[in-house]
Length: 110
Image 1 (cartoon, rainbow, N blue to C red):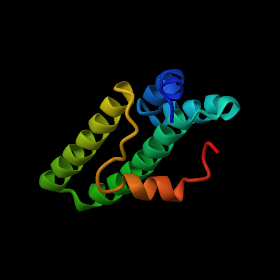
Image 2 (image 1 turned 90 degrees about the vertical axis):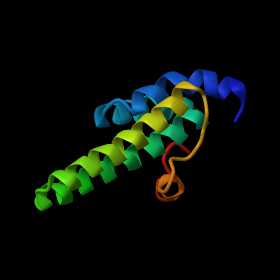
Image 3 (image 1 turned 180 degrees about the vertical axis):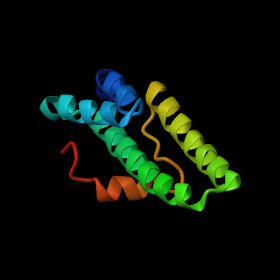
Image 4 (image 1 turned 90 degrees about the horizontal axis):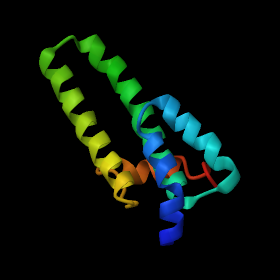
């Protein structure tokens, strides 16, 4: 990944973390260029959003303030970490789950 790839893909990488709609927009806008930096962050954000929705469903069934607070803190930290990496032009995997997301979504953006 070159510095030029990072600079060209930074905008879409940032958009991918804003909402699930932003992830979808970044994915389709990146289909023509196939920027490796954007593809990396689209895979990370898609994994985060899908995990977020699945775990939100599970946590909502628990109906506990502690579970809800832990859920929000966990995903808040992961999203902020990933967003800061996208803004900073870094392609660092999200702790705990980033390598898994890269593996299962490896066909996206290639």
